Image 1 (spheres, helix red, strand yellow):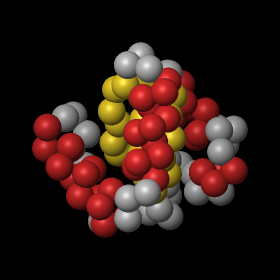
Image 2: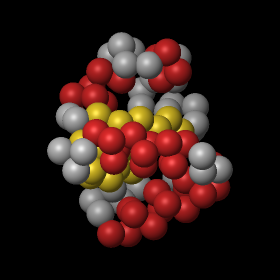
Image 3: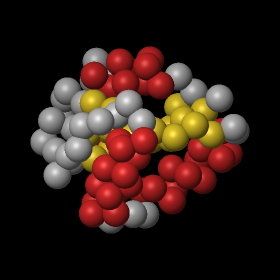
Image 4: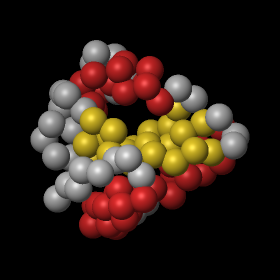
Length: 91
């Protein structure tokens, strides 16, 4: 199983990525080892994720998410939070 995810950084920016181990990936981000972008914006928290069957599907979805505007990403996050355990809404 693969996942595509959006993180909320400490400066309220959003970061999108993919992984095959969601918990480990967020942990590595928060250790400052996963991405130069998030390293300077710790801590991060997961605000959105989707499961994908293959790495290829996850990469395609990641690409599509990265093309969204911030407003579109926030709308997606807020809609998903109504249906999932990720209940925190962000601005």
